[in-house]
Amino acid sequence: MRLTAVATLMAGPAPAWAVEPVISNEAWLRQFYERQLQARDRQSADPAVAAAAFEAFRQSLAPDLQALFDEVRDNPLPSDEPDGSILNYVFGWGALPGREIKLISIEERAWWRSLGPSAVVTLDIEGNVRDLVIKGEYDGKLCRWFIADIDYGSGGPDETLRGRLERVGSRAGRN
Image (cartoon, rainbow, N blue to C red):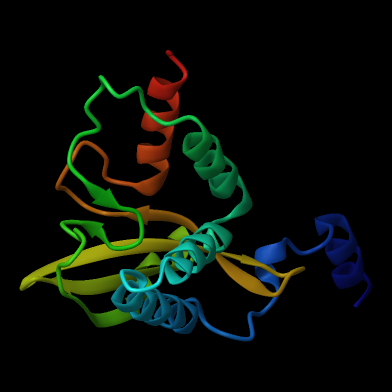
């Protein structure tokens, strides 16, 4: 008993991710993507919906990724530099305006648990099935999930959201 107490004290406080979430990463992502799809369907008719969906995405990002996102948003690429293929930050490659997008599934993969909470979001974009791998981050103090990164797979010069933001940020800084 005494040895256990000493070991616990020496280990220090549990990290934020050790607090048990009230909703799974998978369930949180399902809610997030369903809301984003609903907003996408309505945003062409109402610009306020587009602004709200954009802000919901921004707020869903982990604090460090959100800071990087804000930095890039405020410092766009120079107009003479190509940005590569068009990437929709939420839905990935090929999710151009006007294309039909359907959510097929969201599932956590047990063998990824050692890498932290991750889930595969499978989308159908105009008949093309694409997988996004979303790395989640749980903040026990705030009792909420964040997106730590999105792996879009192949399709353009950037495979991850973080990679895209870092590349755009480094280019934008060369004005």
